Image 1 (cartoon, rainbow over the protein chains, first blue to last red):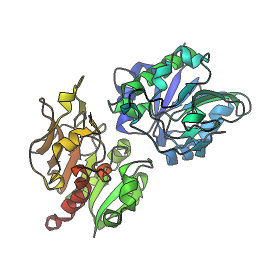
Image 2 (image 1 turned 60 degrees about the vertical axis):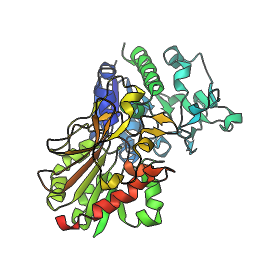
Image 3 (image 1 turned 90 degrees about the vertical axis):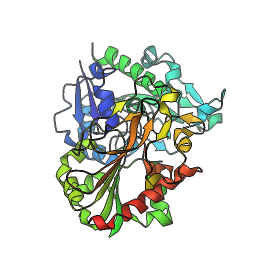
Length: 210
Length: 205
């Protein structure tokens, strides 16, 4: 039972993966451009860090698809253009409002769609409330976890985090989010992003590293 | 010769998007995907702009090419935190531990053409929020000229160095300086002045 992370050589990947706060939470780190056939075999879950080169990820797409079809759990974080290479992922651009929190009392629109989902035993509901990079549109069979309310511009199905069990022939599991916590945590700049990643890694510890 | 080559890292909503579409500045630089650097003849450019999202493991693998560019009199501008020192004059970033707002004040140590007419207060605060400019330092090499430092600890957030290989190296320990090009403050002066500064050193080649 182990978790691998796929990273892209940026400073925030290095900081998040190697600094004391989270370094014990990953069993192995793969540099995306070097990812090779068979590397992902045997890992219970694989996390693709946010902001890895989408061109590199598309070039390694076959490895991710095969991992899913063999029953793996793939967790894809934000700004990876997952809609161009991961099964079932649809996404639309929304200009990012980095400043929503300057107006006290503003509702940025986040809603917890399925509070009983296992992820929320570890991820605090408030730790997902920060700026987001576009909206996902979960396909049939996916479980939306964090959505943007329709009246707040989320449309009928705008989603920031979802869990899609039973994809890729029924055995794989794909968790996708538009949030980019490696970047913010690794830049020493946004405590809520660090809290979200901490919660997510508490979940991967409990679900995949026991 | 073209003023600068910018290495693109496929990120949306960054300064590169503004820069590319700006008639004045966009016509002074080329933009290529980061991973195509190996196939580029850098002799066609005066400057090389490397931003915060760059894959530094890749840059480390291209160290010989970067040094050859410097040796030819080129200027390298790096914005971001050093994780993999891809030039001899770079050392790993040091964050200011448990920083407070006072630690984030941008203090001018030396005048520099890139920051001429830029009010340090416009670097310290954006919309009243401190910390965007920098939250730590890339330790400068001996002999470097520190341009700005942060807070009472004087953490060097900007420096210029003359690399042993030749050329010039300008380092900012924060987000891309060309990302301020659409700012409505004096911070917007940095991007055009950066290209002017790169272009002005023609005599070095």
